[in-house]
Image 1 (cartoon, rainbow, N blue to C red):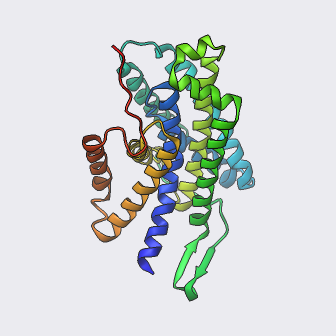
Image 2: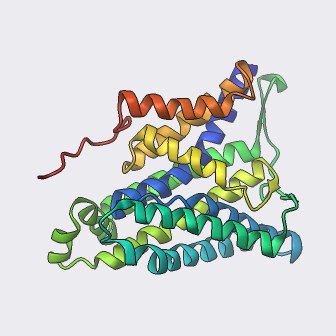
Image 3: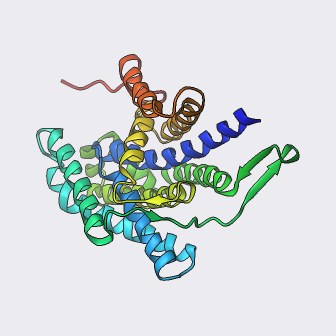
Length: 294
């Protein structure tokens, strides 16, 4: 039963990576940029929930809703102020460096407001979970809810993209911004909506992550953000199902690697996967090979 327990825990961790990776992959697929500050939106969302639930004593649901709203506003404002002026910059490095700058800004703002001390995050999920096989297999409530929430988010996103006017606009912008603009699609509004959705998802991922691993610092979102980027690349960055598949695979490999190989090498294994993917199949599992026009 121990292998099955670790496998389910890997699915849970992978689900968190998948939700974060969805933000990466949507922004890259539509705005064609890597938002390396995305991981820090997770940290912001966690601090908002921590403040509302643990400090103000309000219900966890209120904390989650406010956290999603604040992360959405921060994501949209960041896109307007920091990324939009560089959208037509000649080198993609300008946007990449700006994203790293935004990441450090958010981390240092959190240091200034909340301090460097590790905060004990109270789980927003009170359900203890299930005992199966006569008590030999115990699945925690946060594990089950994390997996279910990630699947619901995937289904909702797929429905939104393919069944709504705004989703169709996202698809058009992802294919060709110029042609989409000529067809009457507001490209700026579409990109802002993408950042809003991705940032709200980061808040949800942060709450689930800190509920499972209850410690919070200004650097909480840094490493999971980078690992989620690896998951997005593994699944094929720009592909929503790919982000989910990549996240789940990465989470399972990390937990099993930590258990059966070495806990100290788990991060090395994750980044080793990134190197192998880039060497063997740079487009990822579901990524498209796009030919550049000359």
